[in-house]
Length: 120
Image (cartoon, rainbow, N blue to C red; front, side):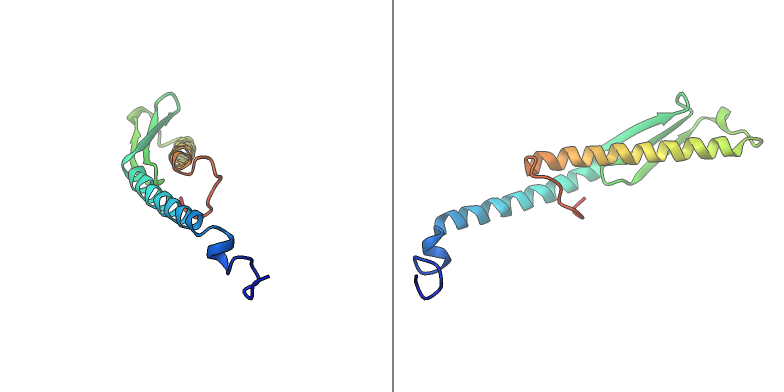
């Protein structure tokens, strides 16, 4: 064995330096593609409605609520709990759909390599 512990004089010779360079270029391209996909998620939206359309929510792919629409007939001062439950349900569904959108968009970039915790 060579002095460095790997035949061929270290990482460049024994492991094929050209392949390492290609791998680095692919990783850099994937990082740029992921950054663009994350930026695109800010402009993409999902919309959900609950209670037969009584409450609608629009959220971005970055999980930011952009709009809440409440039909006036749902606002009953004697049943505030129902309104709260509908809003909670709508917001949670909007965030779930935003997650699905983000996972779908990022999956296009990563090619199904799996999740990258903390990226989105």
